[in-house]
Image (tube, rainbow, N blue to C red):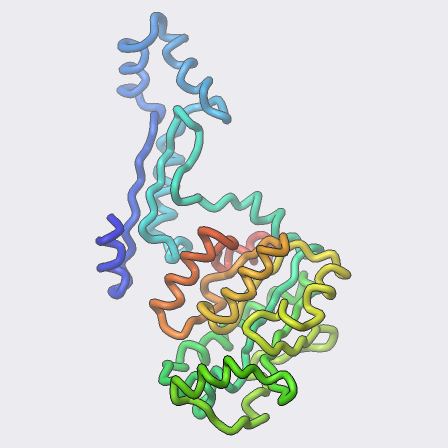
Length: 299
C-alpha cells in the first residue's frame, strides 16, 4: 500500500485502508456465539470485555470513519491503515483524530499561534526563495489563507506571535554564508525583503526577530511562552520543511505540544511539505486542518 500511496500522491489520489474488527452484525455475533462460547449472553459479552470501552463497534461508526477518509477533512491522510479492533479496543498505526483531546490541547488560554517568516524574502520575486528557484505562488496563496484564519482566530486567541527572520551583521553565520555560496544564491542583503508580506501584526500581537531557522535559538521566544504559561504551539507559515519543522522539533524537545494546520503552511515544494508533515506527525506534533481548530474554538 505504501508504494501505491507514493505513486498516486502526485495526482492528488490518497490511499487508505480500513480493517474493521468485530462489528455488531447478526452474522458476526452469531459466529462468535456458536463457535466460541456456550451461551448467547456469554458470546456477546466476552469479546467486548477485553476492550477498554467495553463495547462492540457499530456499522454507523465504521461508515462514519470511511466517510471521513473520503472527505476533504482528511486530505492530509494517505498510507493510513485504520484498524478497529474489538480485541484491543484501539486504533493502530495511523491515529484517528481525537477531537476532544485536540479541543483540550488547543484551549485558547494556553495556546499560542506562531506565524513563521511570512516575509517578502520568501513570498516575493527577487527574494531568497525565488532566487533559489522555488515556486513562490504557494507562499503568496498562503498569505490569503492565513489572513482569513486570523479573522476568526483573533476572536479567541490572545497569544499571537509573528516570527521574523532578521539579519544582523554581528550575528552572521559563517556556515549559512558557505551554504548560500555553495548553492549560488549569496546576495547583497536588502532590508526591504525582511518586511512582512500581507500578514501583518495587529496591536497587542508580538513580533520576535530570529537569527536561525528556529525562534528558540538565541531569542527570548521560550521565555515569553513560559511567562504566558503557554503549553501548546500552533505553528504556521514558511517553510514547512525548514523553519516550521525546526520550530516544531525545538518546541517538542522543550515539552510544548505542537499542532500544525496542514493548510496554513507551505514548503519549498509540495513533496518537501508532504514528507516534513509526515515526519512531524510521527515524532514531534499533530497535523490537523485549520477548520478543526475553528471547530474546537466554536467558530
